[in-house]
Amino acid sequence: MDPSSLSEQNLAQPEGATTPRQLHSIKAQLDLVLLALEALTGLGSDAMLAAAEGLGVSDLLSDRVNLWRLRQASPLRKGQGRKKLDIDEGRALVLVCCQLAIAHRDTIRQAVARLETTLAQGQAPHRAAQLGDYLDAFSNAYQDRMEADQTATTDELTTLGLKLLVDLLFYSGSGGSRKLWVALLDRAGE
Image 1 (tube, rainbow, N blue to C red):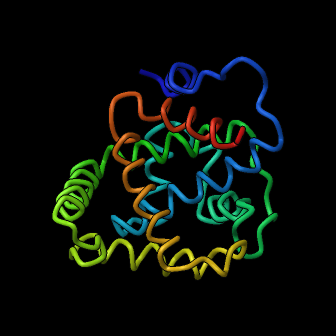
Image 2 (image 1 turned 30 degrees about the horizontal axis):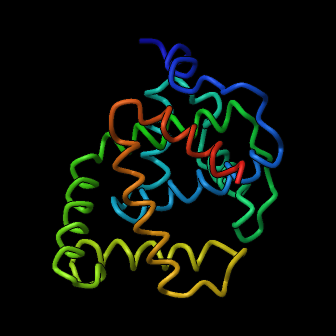
């Protein structure tokens, strides 16, 4: 299947055009999904660029500087605003996020299963080794990179990190890119 048909099939735009306000929020959400993937798997820009190349969207995500500029477009980022995100770049990032989630599906499933077990036993998620490592990495990266909410509490970052972890499970499954795109548009409309 060629990547352009994948883009059209999985990321068909709902009725009505995407508004600038939606793109503003989409930029932040995409960056958070990538941040969660980084925190859980330890992947970096090389893996993101390799996924872009494999998907045939390397013209939109061509190198580390370009990827960094796109991620810096997030309104949550320190020094944000260096690059605006257009709809094609947003779609490319969605495809990359989901491709990476698929590649790390086992890790994501293990983490979510551990979360379910931990919660069922009435234990704090950060006490489970894999979840604790993920939550520490996520919180540290968030506090290091994000400017918009420097007053976020540990509990708020834990809640955000765990929500993103569960979201990753859905994005790693069948129709994941469509699910992510719809979730982005839904959240942007809130």
